[in-house]
Structures are given as structure tokens and as C-alpha cells.
Length: 390
Image (cartoon, rainbow, N blue to C red):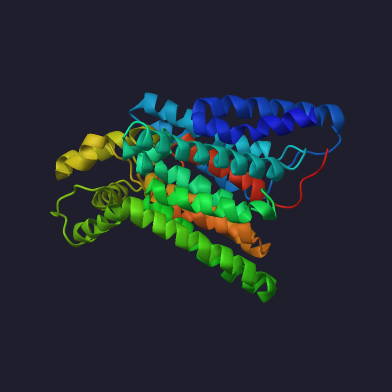
């Protein structure tokens, strides 16, 4: 049954790419098999909550308590369902058993490799055979997966490449593949976050492991950034030009909001206003309704028509649960990054940095491709202490 558990865990990333509902069922099967293995093989090994689980559980408790002052009970119930992994996966991480990290990296690494290769073939087919080049960039390239979340998944896969999965022979070809595809996705946040961690990796390794490991890492990191930059400029240079509209929106509330960059500034400002006027939050289920009313009042049609959430996890938590939410989410990141820093885990710290950078521009815990992936990543690289083998 241990082999069965391993292969079910390895199906989680493909399931996430297919959709959150599929991933939920795969995770349920994996956990049931894990419990069976524990109880049948080594029931004397004690279950224990891993270090760093507390902030995740506290954040889910806020989701639950936030329903007490939510008018939209249906939205509250849906939120609890989407974010169930905030409660579920920290508890699963404490079940004694085989290493979760090995199967995580196999699933994410090879799952993303197959998916990205297929998207390249798909885009080429539509361009060459059907005469439609629109599938080379942004959502056309990433398909049903939002480009920002797929960029996050791909950047994590690259951080583990050759050390955690793929081996040394796969380092260069898969580095080029992943960098090329992140650029084609055209997510500004995804591209900039991937570049930041790629440039930070050799710096951290030189500090924690000495210069001996720096040469190989520096070469690979620079190649990754070069391919990523060239791909991004070719496919999405105009999207980076939109960032000027964000500066205009910062300078003036009356600036037109007609791009995703300016739209983010507008929703950040609106979300902060809600937080300041509702220090206890508006409740788990009322975030969208409250913000839509604010957009309507402020004439922000771009955000109102799209019913945009805060696009920032701190503000998302603040609008829902007030300052307690901001604190709870900050503790999640503090615990993750602090633990990785103390353990001098380069990959753990950089994955936490990716989490932080994406949380600054997306409400990453509001969709399953964000919350399930990030909790699963935490289970793999930031658990306190070694796993107990069964």
C-alpha cells in the first residue's frame, strides 16, 4: 500500500491542473491510504502536529468564525469548502508515514513538464496548422489555469529541479522549458517573482553554503533569467507597458482604470478603505458584496464589472476578518520564512518568498490552485523536523 500511496500523491499536481474538485478527491484517497498504512504497519508511532501548523489552523478558524457576522451565508459556506485544506493538510502533515517531499517534487516537476510541453505543442498546432497565433501568450497559452498561478507552480518546480527531481541531466533543457513558458504566460507578477528568486538563489547559497556551489547556480540562474526575459518581451512586452497606468492610479484617484495594473491599485485602495472602516472585517461571506458596493460608489467600473477581490492576501484577510486577519496571515509567512531561515533551507526560503511575492498581488488563498498547492508545498519543504518513516 505504500507504493499505492506514493502514486496517488503523485497524481495531485495533474489533478490540480485539471481542476480543484478532482484534486480534492485525489487528496482524500491519498490521506485514507496514508492512515491505513500508519495504522496497519506502525500504529505505535505517535501522530504529532508539525511545527508551523498553528497559523494555518488559526487562519481557517477565522474563516469559520467570520460566518457569525456574514449576511451572505452561501458565500461563507463556499469559502469554507474551497479553503478546507487550511484545516485538512496541516493535520495530514502530522500523520507518520513516508516522505511527503519526494512525491511532491515528482508530481510538481514531471506534472508541470508534461503540461507545459503539451501547451507548447497546442500553441504550435493552432499557429501553424490552423493559422491562429493567439495561443502563444497569456491565458491562450496557460489554458484553463490562470497564468499567475501556473507561473507560481512552474517557478517552484524550477527551484527544485535537479536537486529534488529531474536529476543533473535534465537541468539545462528543463530550465529553458520552464523559463520560456513562464515568459509566454505573460503574468507580470509571475515573471517578476520568478526572476527575483532566480537571482536570489545564488546569493543565498553563497551565504549559507560557500562559494563552491555558486558557479553552477549562477550560470543556471542567469540562463533562466535571460530566457525568461527574452520570452516575456517577445510575447508580453505591451503588458509591462500597462504598469505605467498603475503609477497614474497611485498619483490620482480620478485616473482611468482600464488595465489590470491600474485595476489592482484601485481595488487595493478600496480594500484598505473597507479595512479602516471595519476593523473587525465584514465577515467571510460578505467580502465580494461589500467591495462591489464600494466599487459602485466610487465609479470603478473595471473592478465592479469583474467583481474583483482585493488581489492581495493581506487585504483579503483584512476585509474579511479585520486586523486579526492581517495578523494571522502575517504569522503564516513569518513562521514559514523564519523556520526556513533557521534551518538554512535555501529552497524552503525561496519558496516562501515566492508565496510572499504572489500574495502581494493576488489573493492566493482564495482558489484551490493557490491554497491547495501552497499548503502541499509547505508540507513538503517547511515541516519541522524529519519525517517518521513507516
